[in-house]
Length: 464
Figure 1: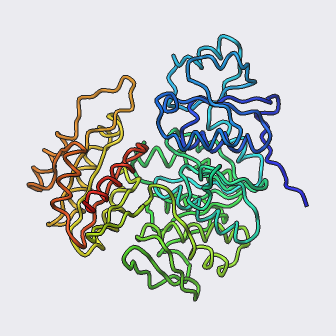
Figure 2: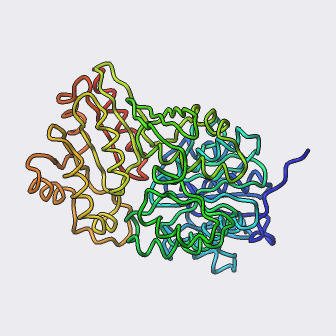
Figure 3: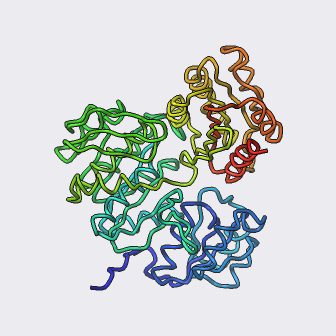
């Protein structure tokens, strides 16, 4: 029996597609999908021009995707359309050239919407846990023999190999996709199953996010919602008998959840589930994934078996062990809610927690300033410490009048001597001298691939 191709009506008149900003996780996943589905795919990225993240670009090229410099010369290739992200500036040379030549420009969310809305689909959104939950749903559905096409915003180790980057799995026309709320486009998705992990302040205030999520949930056949999130509970009441809820406050027979070191376990419907990933937030992610899989008819037993082998994702609690007995963790946590989950998980350490955080962007740092202060002053212990790296500068015309040093000063005004603003080299030397057996070094921050290199450098410093 042949594979059913993925339907993409927005590209009905297109044969060749160019991706401006192909290095982004959401963009590279879609580029791989189109390439697999038989389109002629090319792409460019500033990171590629600067020689960064070479493994990603090498894998894209091995799949047959042509990469070029981001200088407007893609117009010579005369693609049928150009796909761009919201991160691309209006004066980008490729965008300018495309408009001058009349090449159709499609935004990344529009392409993903066409895929999700025109195939049988499960779409996962929410403020925290989207990538992990999507990967869990995908693994369960894969174990059930349904051969999903998977679109992720992060790299799952299960889907990585010498050619594929891990944020895409080729499959049938059953789509399991992560859909982002950060640009408001989630309101345009109409999946068969709409999954909402939770709602918390990140790119927007919760009230605005609720407005985005209402049409997303209303347009689906089934809505999966978190009974433990008070913002989500407001949306359950709108469900018109199509809502499925999960969580500790749901009708599930759920009990005995425990976090044991860097693993977690819980009982559900008479079965013991063992997760190879830690933290109560991952138990919540697993319950969400199980609820979503159940809407597709997957048994609890298949859910249990598949989740016991869940391989995790890149930069989601990636652990480097050291000869000194210090665990160094590389984690994507960057919003206050994600940081809270990471810090609570780190508290299972036998010793101190040395938290390292790089704020991502000046605008987001300013928007979340008070929330950052609260999460660090409330969720670090008396013996713990916080190291703040310089704010990640994403370029553009941002107002750069806030700094990590200012944040450290405010935090120390509440919790004296808790925070220190440091540079990376200084940090590595300091932690090598301070961290001891049983301690955890938790490196947190978004989208900057070099944070993984930093975590590895810290781990290697303990071997000297």
